[in-house]
Structure formats: C-alpha cells, structure tokens
Length: 202
Image (tube, rainbow, N blue to C red; front, side, top):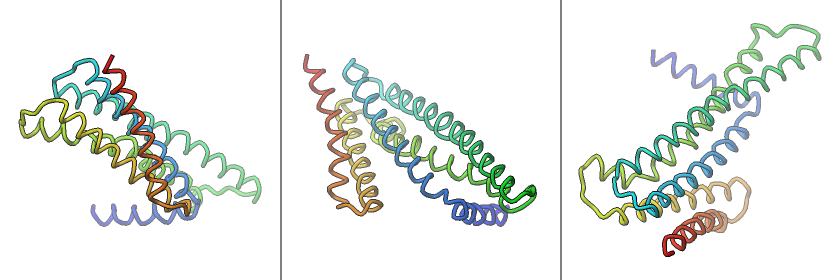
C-alpha cells in the first residue's frame, strides 16, 4: 500500500513536469492562500466586532468557510475545470498527430495532473486559514480561559505572519526583494485589521 502510494506520488511529480503543471498549481496555491487568509481575517474580526465571545463560534465559522471554499471550490471545482482543459488539450494533440492517444502516458498524465493541481489549490484554501486560527484551536482543545480579544489579535498577528511569508515566497519566485514583497502582502492584511478596528470604534 505504501509502495503504491509512493509510486503514485513519483508518477504525479513526473506528470506535473511533463505537462508544465507546477506553475499552474503554484498560482492556484498562492491565490487561494491569499483569499483564504483574508477571508479568515475578516471572519475573525467580524465576529469580534459584533460581540462574539464563544471560541467555538470563531473556530466553527472559519473551519466551515475553509471547507466550503477549500474543498468544494478549491479542490473539486479546480479538479473539474483542470481535467476539462487537459482532456481538451489531449484531443487537440490527437487531431494533430492523427492518432488516438488512449492508453498512452499522455492520456494518463492528462487525467492525473488535475489531481496535483487540485491538491495544491485546496491546501492553500484550507490549511493556511486553519493555521491562522491556531490560538482559538489551542484555547478550545486545552480548555484555556482567555479574553477573546487576546485570541483575536493573536490570530490576526498569525495571519499577518502567514501573509508575510506568502509574500516572501512570491518575491523569491519573481526575483524581487522577498522582504519588500512580504511587507506588501502584510500591508494588505494590516489594512483590513485597521478597517475593522476603526469600524468597531464607532
């Protein structure tokens, strides 16, 4: 079982290289990570602004949104759209070479690569937002009694850190200064924090 899984992962990596899918997967990961983190930040700050005090409410809101966005949109929808595009390319190639490619490595790659892209798309939309609410999760699991504002701003700080690291990653990809790129992403998140803080003051 483990050997089959490792073999599948090796093949998946090779197929992704073959069809130049890594760039697409990277873009989907970054885009969905950014969307997921900002959505999480909005959910946490929005709950706080309207007086939510139950830790479970924060966790449930973020996990529910992350599952809906990450699994159904990030993974399922991405898989279906990527699969359609890959099969379309396969049919075009068949017409160009005037022969069927059924049963070939190209057909297998066209059917497997969408799984690779969908996986990274879903990871960005689900994993990073859940990490962002780690303070709430820790408080809920460990039964800690803490002021909700401490958890809110600890979570917001963690999300800003994730945005910074995402920006650093983009900077390395683009060849720009990673710190500047990270600061740019963080500034967007800080703008959201400032907006919600200002709204709560009224």
